[in-house]
Length: 115
Length: 118
Image 1 (tube, rainbow over the protein chains, first blue to last red):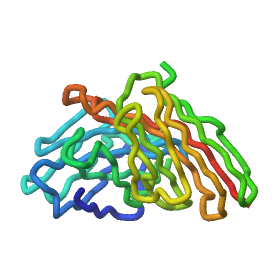
Image 2: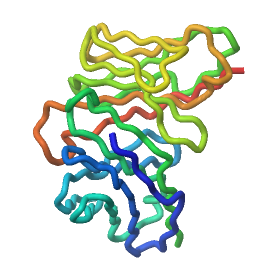
Image 3: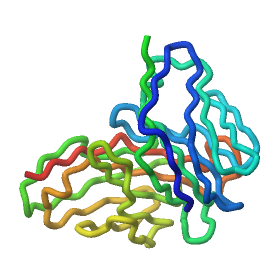
């Protein structure tokens, strides 16, 4: 699975958009970008994933650059409850190859939303 | 739906003791995983299973054993506890066979077991 690079920490004001970048310059054509978050030592929570098109769900939007070497997770109206560690993960979806759906976690970005 | 249930939530072990961390899921997921998370670090894969009777090593398997006799249960065994195994342990499950989109390929994680070895 491709390696990802994220800033170690970011701040955001409550009610503003939080834009979390991720660099994955060695991504392969069959690898997806996944985002998870972990709130204060709870189990990680799935947020969103995408291949090459921008994606949006009830939690967030995912913007993937045309060359797929980087992406941005957008929380449109951050709240205090969005304070968490956000992980950007790149992997082959499903049981492709020998990955067996495994997730490889880096250290993520600590997002702090302040009043 | 309970999702993924882990027990116990907390445990203190003495060096050399043994214990089993329990994990159960009620979503009929094929794949199950054990991760550990050390303070300030990301999760590391210990073992995983693609179905009953099938297990394989992850990134950090030394000192651990697993079994998968049923689809629902995936216990993690520590035989001779060491201080280096002090960590938070997360169990997760997924079902890669479902259709694309939504959370079909997302993991469901348990709430974790915080283990301290002294």
